[in-house]
Image (cartoon, rainbow, N blue to C red; front, side, top):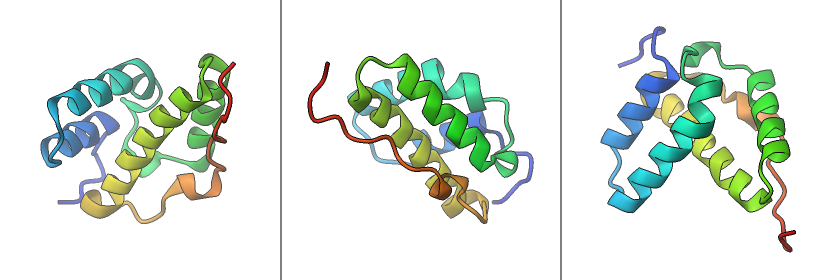
Length: 109
Protein backbone atom coordinates (compact mmCIF):
# COMPACT_ATOMS: atom_id res chain seq x y z
CA UNK A 1 0.00 0.00 0.00
CA UNK A 2 3.07 2.28 0.13
CA UNK A 3 2.88 5.38 -1.99
CA UNK A 4 5.55 8.08 -1.92
CA UNK A 5 2.76 10.62 -2.49
CA UNK A 6 0.87 9.94 0.77
CA UNK A 7 0.36 13.14 2.75
CA UNK A 8 -0.38 13.51 6.45
CA UNK A 9 -4.00 14.28 5.55
CA UNK A 10 -4.18 10.90 3.77
CA UNK A 11 -2.42 9.23 6.68
CA UNK A 12 -4.80 10.71 9.26
CA UNK A 13 -7.89 9.65 7.26
CA UNK A 14 -6.52 6.10 6.91
CA UNK A 15 -5.62 5.92 10.61
CA UNK A 16 -9.08 7.02 11.80
CA UNK A 17 -10.81 4.68 9.34
CA UNK A 18 -8.77 1.59 10.25
CA UNK A 19 -8.76 1.92 14.05
CA UNK A 20 -11.52 0.86 16.40
CA UNK A 21 -12.09 4.06 18.34
CA UNK A 22 -14.98 5.44 20.34
CA UNK A 23 -16.84 8.38 18.80
CA UNK A 24 -15.54 10.69 21.53
CA UNK A 25 -11.94 9.70 20.74
CA UNK A 26 -12.48 10.23 17.02
CA UNK A 27 -13.88 13.73 17.68
CA UNK A 28 -10.98 14.64 20.00
CA UNK A 29 -8.30 13.33 17.68
CA UNK A 30 -9.94 14.98 14.65
CA UNK A 31 -10.10 18.34 16.44
CA UNK A 32 -6.48 18.06 17.60
CA UNK A 33 -5.41 17.10 14.09
CA UNK A 34 -7.26 20.01 12.44
CA UNK A 35 -6.17 22.62 14.99
CA UNK A 36 -2.55 21.65 15.60
CA UNK A 37 -1.12 18.86 13.44
CA UNK A 38 -2.64 19.72 10.05
CA UNK A 39 -1.26 23.29 9.94
CA UNK A 40 2.26 21.86 10.35
CA UNK A 41 2.05 18.59 8.44
CA UNK A 42 -1.21 18.34 6.42
CA UNK A 43 0.42 19.32 3.13
CA UNK A 44 3.62 17.34 3.78
CA UNK A 45 4.30 14.00 2.17
CA UNK A 46 5.00 11.42 4.86
CA UNK A 47 8.28 10.44 3.19
CA UNK A 48 9.53 14.04 3.57
CA UNK A 49 9.09 14.19 7.35
CA UNK A 50 12.34 15.03 9.13
CA UNK A 51 13.53 15.10 12.71
CA UNK A 52 13.67 18.89 12.42
CA UNK A 53 9.93 19.02 11.55
CA UNK A 54 9.13 17.01 14.67
CA UNK A 55 11.42 19.14 16.84
CA UNK A 56 9.83 22.38 15.58
CA UNK A 57 6.36 20.95 16.27
CA UNK A 58 7.31 19.91 19.80
CA UNK A 59 8.67 23.41 20.46
CA UNK A 60 5.48 24.96 19.08
CA UNK A 61 3.35 22.80 21.40
CA UNK A 62 5.45 23.61 24.45
CA UNK A 63 5.23 27.35 23.73
CA UNK A 64 1.54 27.54 22.80
CA UNK A 65 -0.12 25.31 25.38
CA UNK A 66 -0.55 26.46 28.96
CA UNK A 67 -0.91 22.81 29.92
CA UNK A 68 2.09 20.59 29.14
CA UNK A 69 -0.15 17.57 29.56
CA UNK A 70 -2.38 18.86 26.74
CA UNK A 71 0.71 19.46 24.62
CA UNK A 72 1.80 15.87 25.34
CA UNK A 73 -1.59 14.57 24.17
CA UNK A 74 -1.32 16.35 20.81
CA UNK A 75 2.31 15.25 20.45
CA UNK A 76 1.32 11.64 21.16
CA UNK A 77 -1.26 11.89 18.36
CA UNK A 78 1.51 12.87 15.97
CA UNK A 79 3.49 9.84 17.19
CA UNK A 80 0.44 7.61 16.53
CA UNK A 81 0.36 8.87 12.94
CA UNK A 82 4.09 8.31 12.45
CA UNK A 83 3.79 4.76 13.81
CA UNK A 84 0.83 4.18 11.47
CA UNK A 85 2.98 5.39 8.55
CA UNK A 86 5.69 2.90 9.48
CA UNK A 87 3.20 0.05 9.76
CA UNK A 88 0.97 0.74 6.75
CA UNK A 89 2.81 3.07 4.38
CA UNK A 90 6.40 1.86 4.45
CA UNK A 91 7.98 4.78 6.28
CA UNK A 92 11.42 3.33 6.98
CA UNK A 93 12.72 5.63 9.70
CA UNK A 94 10.71 7.24 12.48
CA UNK A 95 12.19 10.77 12.66
CA UNK A 96 10.55 11.38 16.04
CA UNK A 97 12.81 8.83 17.75
CA UNK A 98 15.63 11.38 17.93
CA UNK A 99 13.39 14.00 19.58
CA UNK A 100 12.95 13.97 23.34
CA UNK A 101 9.29 13.70 24.30
CA UNK A 102 7.50 16.52 26.08
CA UNK A 103 8.13 16.13 29.79
CA UNK A 104 5.19 15.26 31.98
CA UNK A 105 3.98 18.07 34.17
CA UNK A 106 3.19 16.90 37.67
CA UNK A 107 1.77 20.24 38.72
CA UNK A 108 -0.22 22.28 36.21
CA UNK A 109 0.31 26.00 36.55
